[in-house]
Length: 224
Image 1: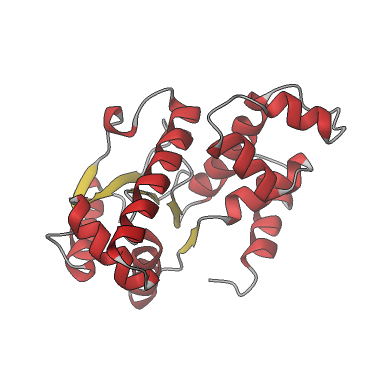
Image 2 (image 1 turned 30 degrees about the horizontal axis):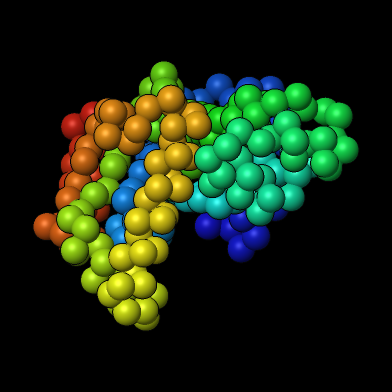
């Protein structure tokens, strides 16, 4: 993966005048809080490299590039649009004196456009950001949902973040709510109503086993 991924995305996305003609392959990773999708994505990239394939993963960089294109501060965009439960984007835009965009649909379209671009260019692992929704209809993709029982996720987050179990549970419940709202903004559905190619219980399978499952699924689907 390039050292400066933001610059890399700029080159890939803004340096092209035409839509990409490729059709993947790509992976989307949706996850419940406590199921470490970023670490899994990093391990997948290393695995692909050992096979002589150059893959990369994108996560928060998608919001960074979307905010840049929309002339919005990324943290303000994320908080007001994807976390707040009230539809306040029109007020935010007025407050920032931006005359380019009239409603939150433009923001959704911009984020989806960047995600779809990465998926079509291929060899991309898209972590979160409603990737399963934005890539709908693009062939040669594998949409994955990582889940686990709440108790397991609490223990994992407590260890990873070095917080007590009560704090970890609070973080999980709050973050799950935010992520579900994020998905609803794009799909109009709860995460439980979306269909994924694979749903993997991280409490049962190790990261190594999960990678093997993903690689096998890609081979069975003919995209690897």
